[in-house]
Amino acid sequence: MSVSYVLIDERRHLIAEAVLERGAATVVDLSHQFGVSHVTIRSDLEALEQQGMLRRNRGGAVANPIDRYTPAFQERSSVNREAKQAIAKTAAHRIQDGDWILLDAGSTTLYVADHLMQRQITIAVNSIYSANKLVEAPNVDLIQIGGLLYRPSLCYVGKLAACHLDDYHFDRVLLGVNGISANGVSVNNCTEVGIKQKMIECANEIIVLADASKLGVTSLTRIAPLDRIDLLITDHAAEPEQLAQLQEARPEMEVIVA
Image (tube, rainbow, N blue to C red):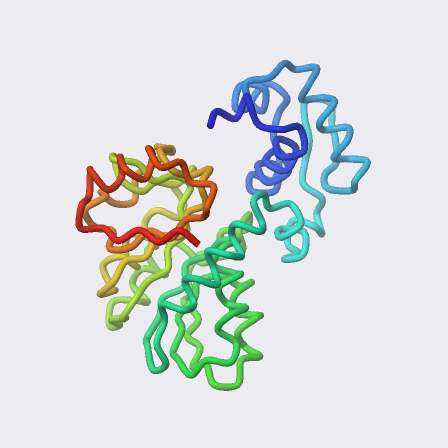
């Protein structure tokens, strides 16, 4: 589905996420990204400012200095929340007690952490949000992956983070992406690519968590080809033809609709 055809509320959520991730965005860039006029974007930014989700400036908007680092704000600005929660619950069922798990940064994987609080497993995370949640889990052996802090997502990235994983091997990695298509899985920024690729190298089973809006999408930077993915978990809004195209490109990939 093209972003130019999304509902107003959903577009505004996407705009809030874009500003949150980048720290700031211009009217020109947002207009190009969402396929609507400058006037429409200014109206959206005004509405989001009234909701306290960002601050407008002359050329666009900036993220609120405090909200930018608050998990509650990240979750509130997230679109497709029910779909992501369903995906997270299904993913958690895939995990066995005693597993060694790599949990990628992202809103869907943060929901997965909710379902793992009472499990007896080992989890490695590069997300400060997930670490803050799982530190309260009584039976989880928690490994914090260190490295360079990527502030928009509050996660650790870069060569140091990748090197942290050199001596580890995990049963499964749960990976968040911005797009999955016949071309592979991809994200919309280059900063997190290295650590995600390293996570894929370190796990027996590669599980991609992607709501329906990400199916058929080729984002800015490819993380891995589709033949590296073992399991895709998506939601009931997924279009059958998109799933068919993915499975035609990668017949060995299991697909679960949450």
